[in-house]
Length: 205
Image 1 (cartoon, rainbow, N blue to C red):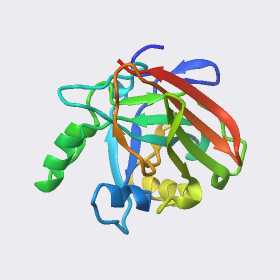
Image 2 (cartoon, rainbow, N blue to C red):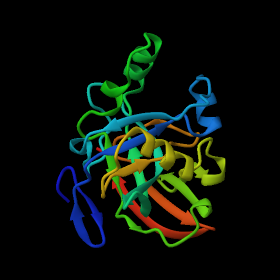
Image 3 (cartoon, one colour):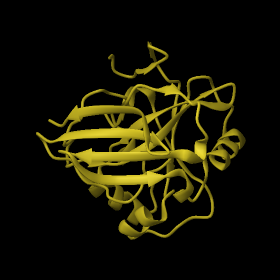
């Protein structure tokens, strides 16, 4: 798959933008030592951040964040898949401590990876995200655990921007984040009521 592209309806698709929601699972907020926000926390990744190769470092060790990701069409959630939001955690802490934007730690080239996207044909609140490392569960989150539910996220984004067909929305990560390890195999899954909708596997280098 080419850089900057995802697979949607069996074809290569280049998303116009990737919207990302931060601090959206209470347990993840706690593990980072942050405080929850009542307001929607939004940052963006350019399409050029998308890759299909999972690397363990980019100037510093990278941390994984597995997320339920939606594709938008007609201003609605029409597709779903697994997304990796890769983070330069050391740099992010440095930026946060100084009250600066996060983009340098979040929007670099190769910071976003995605499974194939499938049509959203199940109730949104039935969705779960699972991430495994070498066969061991390391992250598991459900839509009902989100601080800001997908409908509220969509409403907030519509107030922020005119949404484009093909935009992606990464909805935040549950607890369990950590450093990627070279040579390990990571499998991301999206489930609905325990049934797998889509999965993808990457070997980290």
